[in-house]
Amino acid sequence: MSDLIAITFASCEEAQLARYEFAKMSREHLVELADSVVAYKDEKGNVQLDQTINLTRVGAAQGGFWGLLLGFLFTIPTGGLLLPIVTAVFGAGFGALTGRLSDYGINDDVMRELAADMDAGRAALFVLVRKVTTDKVLKHLAKFDGKLLKSSLPDELEAKLQQVLDKASAENAM
Image 1 (cartoon, rainbow, N blue to C red):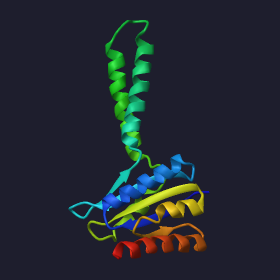
Image 2: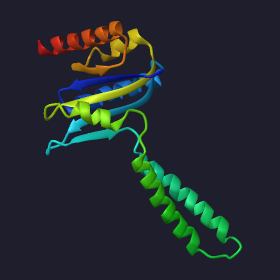
Image 3: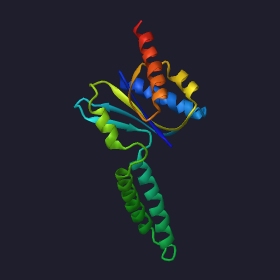
Image 4: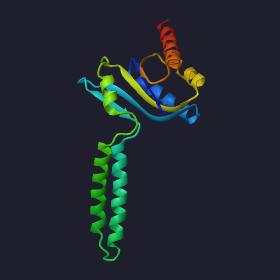
């Protein structure tokens, strides 16, 4: 089962640093990440989502590859070169479209809804975790000044996380 953790930060840069810290903890096998996204408001007040995986690009690359491969397979008997190019272009376009319309990990609508109430300049880090080594993860997060926005963690663990974030906030205020 996965748990959602959403933490707000004073700036987009700090949220990006916290996401980098989660990635580092993932490489150290302290946490198993399913998804992580930084949400922030742009100059016009629109909520932007900085996803770790760009599904449009992934879809375009996969569609282009399969289109090119199929084009070559169908043109081997005729020896033409136009069909592989055409099928690669159509495959890339179709793959980009399906990637754009798909959603992976954390629901985009939920993130936009939660981030809509943030003040300009603030950012939120949304992390979907499968497994957590709680005590070590809390130590890594102790250097970040944030506020827990939403969580599906058990109440006791949620309170510990907020306590660690509050302690970092108090230390940064001194």
